[in-house]
Length: 139
Image 1 (cartoon, rainbow, N blue to C red):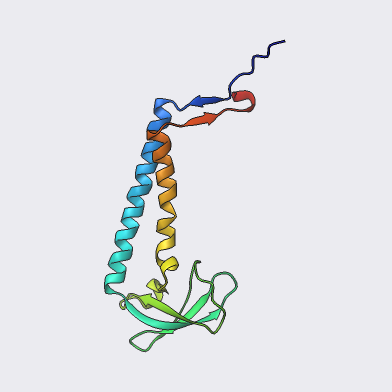
Image 2: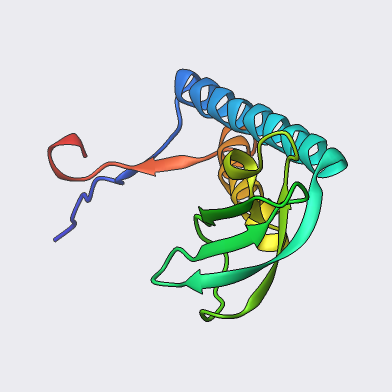
């Protein structure tokens, strides 16, 4: 008895490839813009050593700015240090409280580097060929 099983995989359609390519290019443009903003910030920022005040997932960091003001901010990820630990901080001298961030590689660059696999995946699927698997009532 021969079975005729339907192949659930099909090549991407032209419009699907165009949409993936557009998404990949937009993500690359966003990553390039964020990289430029980061480099611009790092070119004119002040650097000091701060202290982790508390760390319950997103560390609270305190430092003294060049003008003598004490500033405290929450670092949104990519830093795992215990309370009381010293940590390098970068900030814009014109707005220390609004621009302060941990001056570590991951804190500065991880969110930008995380965009690259998404972008390259979309572009690879669009230009190197891709297939999608249809299941359920769509298959």
